Structures are given as structure tokens and as C-alpha cells.
Image (cartoon, rainbow, N blue to C red):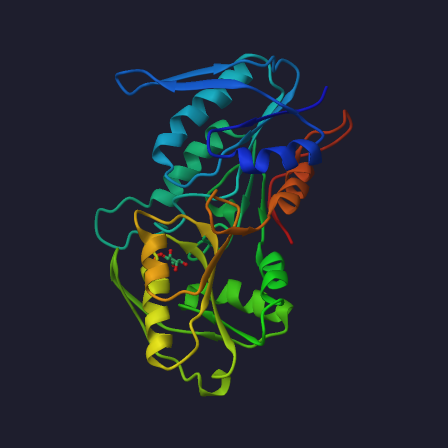
Length: 310
Ligand code: R5P
């Protein structure tokens, strides 16, 4: 029997390509909120004896987590053989240490909850900083897909780009994108004083003055990191930059603010649906999911361990 893919609200943009790539059928479900704020969850397609794939990107995760858990648990109760989760954006990866006394290391707790209900996990460029591998916190088989090769293809179309990473954490993405695009890169220094208080140092960019600056970061959330960098580049007399983010989180007015700050173009991958999506990750995500899915009686899917898929 074909697997069933259920796309949660806000995930339909990736669903069609994944259904065809996974040779799956589209499942239907009903999700709504009771007047008291509790969730109503109903699986409308028969799942008995079938592998279930839940497609749910995890920006704004708090409201999504419980319905996901209810869905996964219900699918298993109704006889699904396994329930995998494709979460193109994986939340809670940045609170990966106790920065101040008493703080929750939410990366760990979130990972434990997801590992309770998902049999496997596929995601795109999780913010791995102090954890070097998802296996340090997730106990289910997983695949990490890297967007760098796709971003490089997009960047290579620009006229003499110079890639710019706003901080040391971004070097892993910027270096990979630059290498594949055959372009130079610079990494700046960032000091974050608060959620919306970010200072980025001015680099020595004289060598690259004639090039098109392309800022690359994994997450654009408040956009303050990019806004500060755009401002510094402007003050240094560079051309207005193109901003490329893997994940279009865009909290509040972040997108408008970034455009107003002077970004000529803002481009993101379609891990979170947004008008800036220009880089399609569906094919690489589908390939990674296929590696974890139980596609034949003799298959041995889900060996523990995260493997990077490029
Ligand atoms: C942080 O380390 C990440 O790589 C991004 O630089 C950060 O999440 C961006 O956040 P914001 O858009 O709020 O400045």
C-alpha cells in the first residue's frame, strides 16, 4: 500500500511535489480549535497498515506541536505502520545552552517531545551550533538536508557576487555556498545584546568593492542581524546587497523592515511558505525522506543516525 502524506495547514506548497516523489497518496484530516483553545484532530483517510508522513514546518512551533503529537499518536492507534515527520524548518534549535542561570535548554526538551511521536525526521539546515549533530538531542533516525548547493546555483546567476556571512555561526553556510558558486566570501562579527539589539562589525571589504554583496544566513527572524549588516555595508559604500536566507521565519514586520533598510532583493528557500521563496527544496527533501521510509518488506529503514543529504 502506498504511504499517506498529510500536509498540515501552511504546508501545501511542498505537498504536491512530495506526494509524487514519495509515490504516496494525499491524506485528509480535520484540525480545528474548540472555543476553549483545545485542539480537535480527526484523521479522515484510512491509515491502517500504511506508512504515514506528516509534513509540517515548525516555525511558530507552540501551536503546532500538540496537534502534531495528537495526529501521530492517533495514526499509530489506528494502525499506521510508522509515522515520519518532514519538518523543513526545525524550531527551538537556537536555545541550545543555558545562557543564564535557570533558563530552559529548549532544544533538548523540544527534541525529546518530537522523538516521542515521530518514528523518523527529515529537516533542512537545522541551526546546529553548539550541538554538532541532531543525534545529540533527537533519538529517532533523521536526515539533514543542506540547502547550500541550491543556494549556490541561485547565487551563481548573479554578476560577480561576494558572499557575506553576518556572524561566525553563518560561516558553515556561507563557505559552502561560496565554494560551490566559485565566489569569495567574508564573515563578519556579531554582538547580540538582546532579541532586537544586534551590532555587526565592518569588515575590510576593499578587495571586493566592485562585487555584488550577497548576505547569506540560515534564519531570518527579526531580521535585525541582516538589517544591521545591510546598514554597515551601506556605510562602507558598497552596492545594496541581496539577502538570502534558508528559513523565512520573518517575525512581525521583519520582512518590511529589511526591505526598508535597503535590501534590493530578499530570497529564501521554501522551507516556510513566504513571498520571498525562490529556491525549491522539495526534491532534496523528498530524496532524504525516501531514505528513511519503509518502501519494501525487506527494507531496513530507520537505522539510527543522521546522514547529511546534499
Ligand atoms: C543566529 O545565530 C542565526 O544564524 C541567525 O543569524 C539569527 O537567527 C537571525 O536572527 P534575527 O533575524 O532575529 O537577527
